Image 1 (spheres, one colour):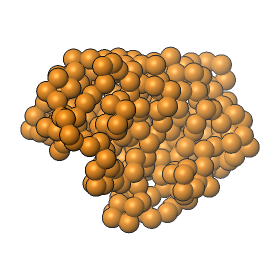
Image 2: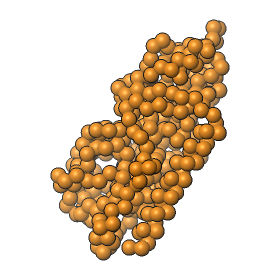
Image 3: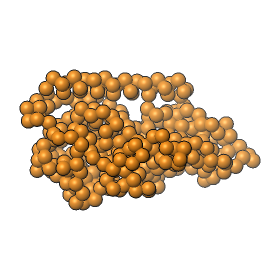
Image 4: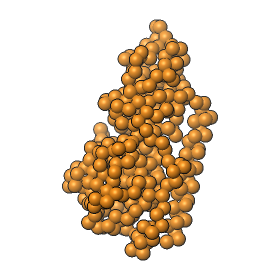
Length: 329
């Protein structure tokens, strides 16, 4: 075993890269809301990006280590403490058997990711360990953690001499590639298939107004609010034949208030799609708490692809450096 759960936090679930290849059967992808933080945490402890981490939302858990482990926490700053002493963020560290890891309310951001060397064991369903609560599959019995649960790692911990060297060297993620988490980010989007169905004023408002992230927001989608509402051209209907949607799709129902789909979104939707958040900016969206605000900026498809490539290159460099470092221990 690796951790005993003393308090589970508000919503703590096991997530890996997601459940791909089954959308044609109506099975959603799931996976981490903030893929950058999930991947960075894994890389810091020598895992591949596909390994399962613990996603913690708003209020973190209290966990007691059952053995010595190499771990990393990335994403939101939850004021992590080990036995009352501050634990590092975006940096691997050793937690020893009997230590209590306590993550508090997120002071900055919304979601943090705990990675352990070897990854967490979890139910493997349709090619993924990701938790999808509505279907009760994957993760820890298909649900969020509860007090008394015991998390296990896939691999044994590192040798004691490696543990000492890890603490001495202090490897960390450079601030130059860290996402800029904040409560009111400007998010880049490309036009959706039905963007031309909206009035010109509505498209202008999408790019000029701030949109409140309401309390009716979750892993399936963020319900946004702003006035005046977004409107279709006269005579067009908000109800349409369902078509494919993905994380980042911005749909607009009859209320005129957008819904920004997230990691647990459905596979198809029947509302007009005014835009799509670029993949590279979804981590920024994932770290906005309810009550925060989003602004949107239009970019081209080429710019969207370039930003995703740059983000992938940053993670590749980080991963290569960590692997070289661990091999040298």
